[in-house]
Image (cartoon, rainbow, N blue to C red; front, side):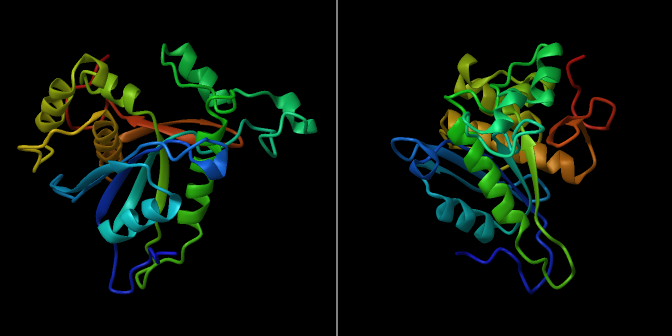
Length: 234
């Protein structure tokens, strides 16, 4: 297992993960995962995608020395659930998280955490979050922070086109936000969502975010329209 803590000091970079399910979590195969890493000045460090296992994802985070990792996946079960087993007594608490319902009320449409098509993704996201957060802090006491993000909603709030509207348009929008080193790239949708997640991690590091929170659930992180930065949608 890669060691993510760095004895030589803190990790100033950020990473974004456009996660997908995997055989360990009930999928038939390793599905394509997008990975992106940005420096503090928004220079692109690495951008890739592939049918990666958890060790490959952890290696990416280690090699890019990310301090904040933003994952596009549910990172908690609905409050009251101890597991994802529908035969367990905890199933009475349902498949939909309170933060998902709050998103619905705002017109956002995340997929509920424990519907059948999402169960494996949710379990993988939770496992990766625990794996990253269990790592020891470096010499300066700086641990790794993991946040849950919804790239589609981030794109809407930043007035970026979603990938369905055209990959080149989304790439151009990310450039306008200040991301550097994207020239000559032809990223796919998974990579662009990972880049969006990494940018949200950058905003989080700067304190330019707001969190949709509910007791017993991992907060969902969004850009803060009140903070300095790009003009956000109302």
